Length: 391
Image (cartoon, rainbow, N blue to C red):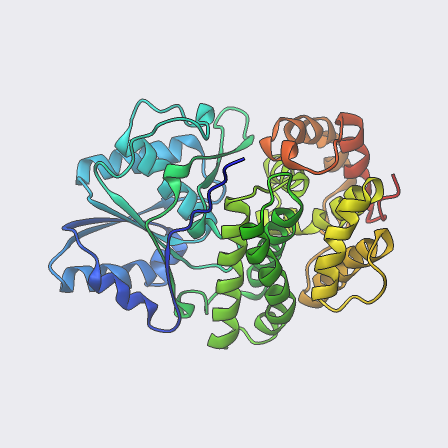
């Protein structure tokens, strides 16, 4: 079988933002959200551009877990401005909005929920895409994926396409140093989930494995330090690199069950994305490792990297799940829906929809162990209570 490994050009380190001065173009459309805009980060990019004789516009209409209607608004604004360069300044929601709006800007006939990896979009006829992440988690600056919500149902849908890789990713630690403690923890767990799932996905490969292994090691080393000292630029830079490596991994291998479960939780219970997928990750490890010795050995590889002792196999895989739970406790992240203070009544009321949305999520097809709707329902019960998976 022939495989491909693709990434954008990555510029990283202190003063990485100076790469903006080297861009070629005339009209830049900056996609961001109101919080990032108020912090002055989008304006910082805009100022560099205008100092270099660009025309630039800032659009700050992105919302968390953006809807298709929001994407269409951004695409319409791009069309009115006539951008030749789109610059996303923000977290995963901003970057996803920019990618999806870029798609509609270049090809208005595209139906986003129906977009597949095999469709020809025709990107880069009008504009290129530059991503400047303000979180160290989603890795969206290094991926060909987008996650958007349907307006009618609120369901998150994820899709990918090779044309959606950004042209350049700029990792400047100054742009993440203001991230608060809880989001530092949650986005870091998002990166960890990408790396772990990229390593066990049915589409894993030797190139994605290299990114996964280093990303897992880096998250365990640098996330606790980042949470403990929010102003340290070295810690922030290391987590940016870890998140980007994890993005490169799953962009070329895919995520799995934790994202199916997590996307559904975000849609139904409105839990933050990084917290959702990070919370369910240990449960999926326990589920996957019970059936297959081969998969347990993969988790054992990751366990060894983070210092878990013992012979490779199912027990070591289970101990890796425990190590992740310990990491979550260290950075102050809830390890169950109950700990996250989700009401039991809200959980029970939403359970049927949780199961339905998880089963519809495309990531489930990449999981190394099959699961049906009853298995999903049981998993959610365990995720609510915090019990270790035993089936």
